[in-house]
Each structure stands twice: as C-alpha cells, then as structure tokens.
Image (tube, rainbow, N blue to C red; front, top):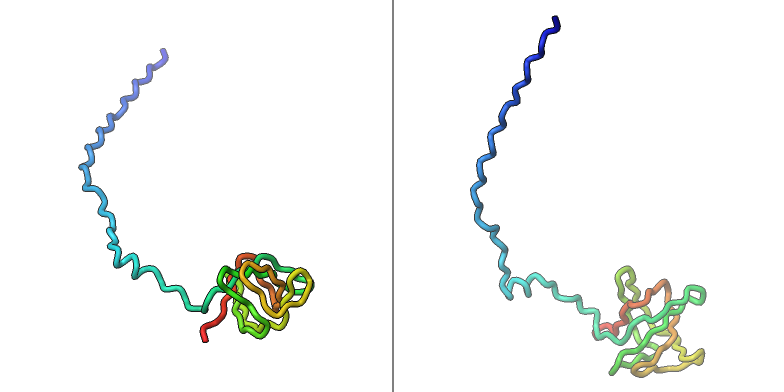
Amino acid sequence: MATKKKPTVRKRVPARAKAKKSAPKKRLVHSKKSRKAAKRAAPNYGKEIGRVVAFFRIPVVAVIQVARGARLKVGDAIRIKGHTTDLKLTVVSLQVNHKPVTEAGPRDEVGLKVASRARRGDRVYLPPA
C-alpha cells in the first residue's frame, strides 16, 4: 500500500501593523534676504559693448555685433568672455563688409582679428578704466 502524504500546512504571515502617520516633511523656507545673499555678484568685466555672432577659424576672425549705445574703435582694449573663452586683446583692425573701418557704431556687425578661438554668444566688454 502506498503511504499518503500529509498535507503541508502553510504558515500564516501576520499582517503588518499599520505605520504611524508621520508628520509632513519640513521645507526649508528661504527669505528674500537669504536668496539675494546666495546669488553671487557678477564679476565686473566692464561695460558690455557687444556679442560674438560668428567665428571663422581659417583667418581667425570673430564677427561682433556692437550693442545699442556702444562704439568700438581701433586701439580699444577689449575682453571677450564666454563659458570657455577669456581673451584680452587690443583692437588692431576692424572690417565692415570686407572694408577696413576705424570705428563701429551701434548694431554694426564687424570683423575683428582675434588671437584664438571665440564662440558664438561670447560677450565683448570694454574693461573699466
């Protein structure tokens, strides 16, 4: 005669106790003063006189659009500052439509010979005197 297997008894797992409702998380409340203090003051590179619109690497020339109310002259010391760019140079020559000029006024796009790479969007400053 074959022996019968005993039925296995499943152990009953106790239901988990309900977790106590915890207090809501506290949020850090920043006052206006602390937010202002957290913002760092922008470094003073001087007066912004334009932005780099294009860059050509073979003649190493940056095209700069002069901002409203600004002028750029041959002989000016300028600084081109961007995320990865930081150039300090003196303007030796300016060209508008492939013609040399001595001064560029507001909203002019001028070609400027630079020492190294400048990227579109870099800002051009006249350093403080």
